Each structure stands twice: as structure tokens, then as C-alpha cells.
Image 1: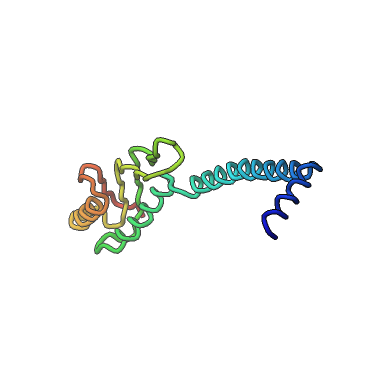
Image 2: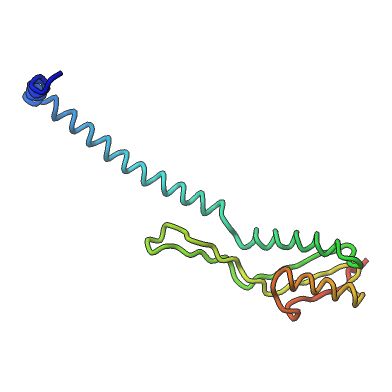
Length: 149
């Protein structure tokens, strides 16, 4: 179609009110899509936060790894670990408050290791060194004790 036919056709549609109706419907659909996209992005953000980092899951993960590693140390034997955290996870957001830039892991306050070889000074020294190096904490934050039978 050439330009003159298009102009004629649009002129006819404008006179009958059909063009106005098409424009109104397209505008309403555009507004509806914008409105729905706001809901969808909020749902995605909530799901991302729910699936994200939590201090309890972090603590559990570290505890399990420590128990596994310590039980492999010579003289440790069966091992149980209690980990206490200083604070919960912190999240850093951009100024708009919606975009998360990083997560700061909670700090370890102390570690209690109860193991079969807890009364052996050599094994306790190895365990203390392993825990302090793995968690980057001081020896004052680590307690080793013997597991009761």
C-alpha cells in the first residue's frame, strides 16, 4: 500500500471512531503489562531472598564440615561440634534498596568440639589448630572436650 491509501484508510477509521478504540485498547494493554511486570519483579525478588543466604544454614553447613574434618584428624575419633555466631548475615543494597550487591557472612563467636580424643593434649592441639585456621579465629574461641561414653 502506498501512503495515500494509508492516509485515506486512517482517515476513514478516525471518522468512524475505530482508530480511537484501537488506540485506547493498546494503551490499556500497555498499562496492564507495566502493572503486571511490577508484581512479577517483586515475586522474583522475594523468591531470591527466600532461597538466599541464612545464618542458620551457614552455621549448619560449617558445623557439618568441621565435624567431618575433625573426625578425620588422628586421635579425634567420633566428633560433635557446636558453633555459635556473633551476628546474622548482613546484606548490602544499592541506594534504590532493591538490588543486592553482596552478602556479609556472620562471624564465628566460638566453637565447642566434643570428641573421643578430647582429653589427649596432642589431638586437642591438632584440632584447635585446624579449627582456628579453618575459621580464622583465635584459640581463645575454641574449646575441646572429651566425648562421654
